[in-house]
Length: 177
Image 1: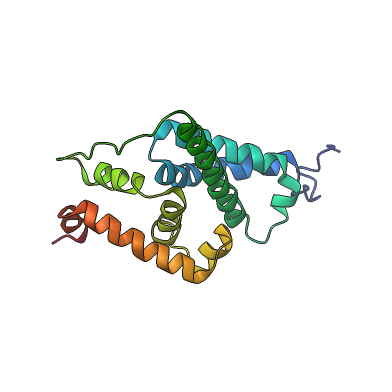
Image 2: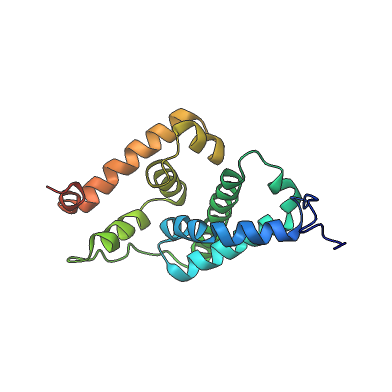
């Protein structure tokens, strides 16, 4: 009889490393996509995804016991992103004052949108990505970011207005007009 219980009808422990490996394989691309939308940079998104998976592995027994493991993973990803942004911002402010980056004139809509998203503060960017790209409810975004629902609504409204102003006519291409 195998010791791990596979093929014997005995349930494998959901907290076991094998279940984490299956989860990581199945969800890595989705986590990467969300990380890329948050970061706007492929290399940083890969690092963020790996950091998230490492944190999930470290606390896999607790994570695997969660009611909604995908929501748990998304929470870890978002909080890791915000913590890293705060740390980087502190480092940048300690050394210099960065100016605004150049806005591309004739870029693909995706590049233009990522550039516009980069102009938002990290927390506002996280709210917009979670609310509109990940199609999360106001309540779930508020819970995830530990703020009130009215904060999510007002920040998203201000951020969308800022994005519309930045994108100018680029939003016409997104609507198909």
